[in-house]
Image (cartoon, rainbow, N blue to C red; front, side, top):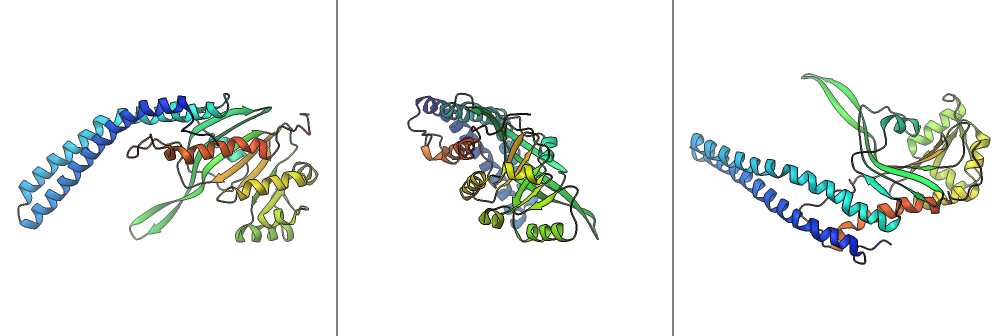
Length: 317
């Protein structure tokens, strides 16, 4: 496990940024306090029958508090970026010198759709914190993604737009060293997925996709496998690979989804937490503060080893 306490370079970066964090936290607390007092003064004035002076005083306090937050906003942005580039970047280099993080890059929406894992097309899409590198022979990258679609409901007050998650979490991509002829998709086998699989197998099929029953019973209970080329899917999902995917899935909080397309393997990890974000009101000098971020980094890096992707059973055609 990557250690914060035993990493001198990382500790030096944290000490430097802690001074900046302390100043930002103090200013933000002061700004929020003035805004809160301003609201309380305005409300109390209404209750006591002195609305005009209380609103004036309250607005002055609120405006002053807001100005404090505005003045610190550029420094906050600089601190957040420095945390990702310097702290997370140093942690990555400690794990493998090839690893880099680019906070403002991610998985582009057309690649997200090309994974073929998701049935909905995003209407709103955000991605950030692209991490890329190479583990031995295998190049890989991953990024945070939040994709949503919208529905519109007619109400008596007009059209109401509602947003629904397609996916929120991390998309991981690795070179599979094989030019696939088709696509193999592995998705969680929940109630709706099982019903869809039954209809697809017994009543109709979607395009050239087939539902494949593989030799591993536990794998079939956990996942539904779609493929355009059944023979190729079985070459990809060998008994050893299925066992490794099950092990990987058991270490993830939510059931993962995978696809093998265009010579790449994609894994979608559903997560509800936004990773690699700088804390403002918690000290950076507490070793525990980075544990979740470092655990995710190590988990993603170890996928190449866990799935044995460095063993080149094929060459590219």
